[in-house]
Image 1 (cartoon, helix red, strand yellow):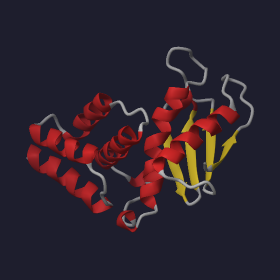
Image 2 (cartoon, one colour):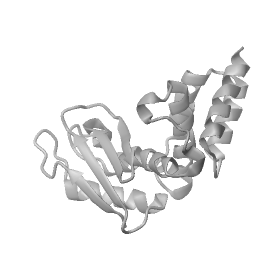
Image 3 (cartoon, rainbow, N blue to C red):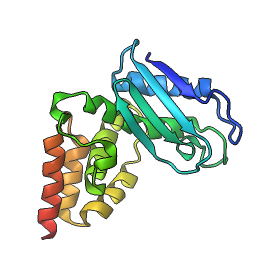
Image 4 (cartoon, one colour):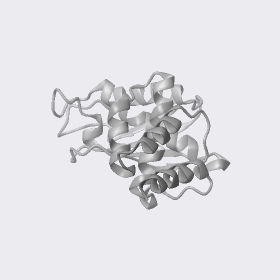
Length: 184
C-alpha cells in the first residue's frame, strides 16, 4: 500500500473523512501498481462542487482534487467510496505513465488539448476497467466522440485506446491524428 497523505484532515463544508479517502486511494494505487513506499499526496478543495482531479506532479504523485470528485451523487456533500475510486484511477494511471520514458514528450496536463486529454483518459480508464476500478465505458465513449467526432473511425480509435495494454505518448498523438483524418 502506498503512503497516502490527504489534506485537509478535517472538512467543514462536506462530511468527508481524510482517513477513508486515504484508504480508498491506497486501494486504487495498489491496483494501478504503486508500491508500498510510494508517497501519494492528495489535496482536496471541498469548496468546489466540480469533478476534476489533476495530476500536479508524478514524482511524488500529487493529485489536486475538486471536492465534487469525491461526492456521492445520491447524497450531496457526503463522501462516495465508488466515486472516489472512479475518479482517482485514471489520474493515478496518468501519473504512472508520466514516469515512463515513452511518455517523456507528453505535455503537462494544463497544456493538453481537449482531444489529447480525452484520448489519454480513454487509455487510462480502459486500464482501470481491467484492474477492477469503476470505469464508465459509455461515458468515456461519449466524451471521446465529443472531442474526436461521431464517426466509425473514431469508434475504432476509441476501442484501440480502451483495450491497449501498453502505449506511449506518440501513440496518443497518432490516435488523435487518425480521428482528425477521418473527419477531413
